[in-house]
Picture 1 (spheres, one colour):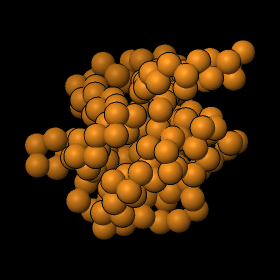
Picture 2 (cartoon, helix red, strand yellow; picture 1 turned 90 degrees about the vertical axis):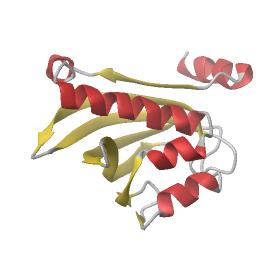
Picture 3 (tube, one colour; picture 1 turned 90 degrees about the horizontal axis):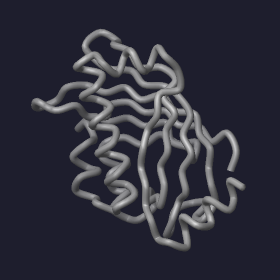
Picture 4 (spheres, helix red, strand yellow; picture 1 turned 135 degrees about the vertical axis):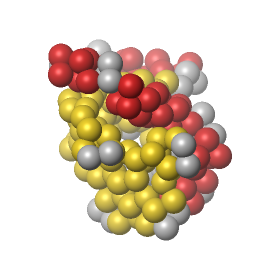
Length: 156
């Protein structure tokens, strides 16, 4: 049934990005102003990915972003933004299940499970990919930006 849903998504050309709280702790945490603001930033970042809005995606990234990426490499100094602009980070769907949301000093830490559907020149294009993620967000120039990310493929 899940395969049929993904097939329908691909045939209609509908792109979607959303997150959901996986438990009551996350639901409660999402009411905290800083965490709520970061979850809005997550929505904007993920929507930029499915809409191929490279400028909006880059705007959600910290200047010093470091990513341990699903290709088992480290991306630093703008490499993630360049990979997005080159079409290597592009999805038709991005669904997150946030299992932890909390403050970590003055930053917000999110952890959980995500399901993406890569498209275009992306690795595994057209196949649902399940990943575990850890994201650390910080305030930079008056807005929340992704500063550290770890993402590991669990099952293609």
